[in-house]
Image (tube, rainbow, N blue to C red; front, top):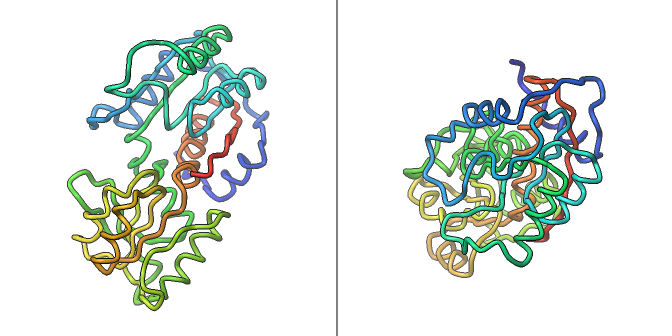
Length: 275
């Protein structure tokens, strides 16, 4: 299988490009088996339910991918006549109230009424070596991986080049340019950066892993108030680039795999979130 050119593929998806050159199809259950195996779902103890979350029609030829299974994405997928939706943040999380009421009911009712399948992959889509959110962040920013940190392997380590050092403000600007949005920087403005740790999404809780690995900077999506003080007192640069923004690439890259494997058509629909 050839490697997806992530930059061009993401550009196509951001332009809402519909791939009409291929007209393949796959059964609902065969797609679930492929995704579960490709993303190695059994490796993970996750707070999310990974895999097929809502069953719809049996045959799938057109998919919509997005970050979160909110009502706006579901409505847009219905309008796009999708057979399936694939997201990073699904509907079912361990420990949630099992009652199907309120907005939760409205989301599920819309899927069932339209007979659309919903697949969701959380940690498996974060760490996959090819289409994972972390791998995609590394490629988007041109980082050369040198390893991982922590017991979970959720934090990646890398550099922009051998013996390359840059000021933390330059790194923040570099990150902002690659994600097309403002980022939040916490550090001394003259700090020089060589080794960079990163974890997309709500990775603030993994700051300790980056510190223990000796990283000069940690880039993540979303942080909490206590992480700011932890970073300042540990002399590590902390950059928050947005939970949603940093987790858009994984589902897009996964769509590329499905186009190659089954000839499905696809559409990326971005329901933006400022967080």
